[in-house]
Length: 266
Image 1 (cartoon, rainbow, N blue to C red):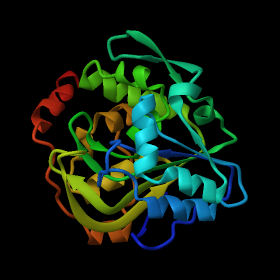
Image 2: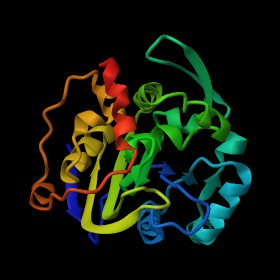
Image 3: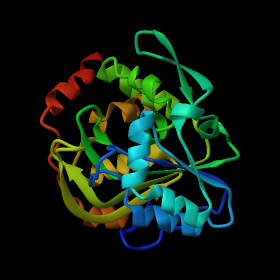
Image 4: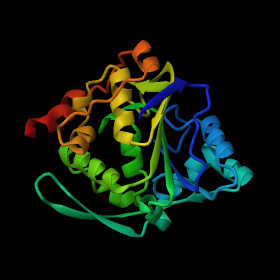
C-alpha cells in the first residue's frame, strides 16, 4: 500500500537494520539532492539499529558530495557507516537488454540481502535520461559500482529494462519520495524547484513511483522502468487522498520527446 503525508510529518520507518540508499545527483550544492533534515529524521527513527548510508559516484565526486551534504558529521552523530560503492561493490549481477544482450554489473551485496531493510529516498526530479528520476532508479542505480552504472546507459529502452530488472532483485525495500519540493524543467542541475508539500512512501518502489507520477501530472506509461517492471500490465493502485487533492502538472525536461523514443518498440 502506498501512503502519503504532508512533507513535515514523520514517516514511520520499520525499525530494522538498514541500508539507506540516497538519490544523490551532484557533488556541488543542489536542490535535487536529498534534504539533510529528512536524512537526520530517518536516522533518529532508526537509532539502535545497524545502519549504513550509500549512493553511487566516482571516488572524488563521492567524497565531495559527502562533504557538501554534511553526511560525515551526521553519520558520526548517529553512529552510522557511509558505504562507497566505488570500493565496496563486489556482488555481481547479470541483466539482459531488450534484445537479449547480457551484461554483468557490480553492486553492493547489502542491497540484495533480504534480511536488511533498504530505505530508498529520493526527491522527484525531472531528468534527461529517465523523464522522472524517482525511487526505483535510485534503488537500482545508486547501489552499483559507478563505472558499471555508466555502462548501462546504452539507450533509453535498455536502461529502463535494466532499472526494472535490478530493482526486482532487491527484496525488503521501503521507498520514500520526498516531495516537499520537486525539481522540474531541465533537472537535476539546471531544473528549478517547485513546492509540492507531500511525502509518498511504501514498500514497493514501483507502486510509489506510479503514484508520484500521477500526482505530478506525468503519464506513468511514459516511464519505461515502470513499463518493464509491470510488463506493460498496469496495476490497480489506490491513489492516496492527499495526492488526489494536491495534483499538479510539472514541466518536464526539454528533451522529453527523445526520451519517449523507447516506446517505439512497445
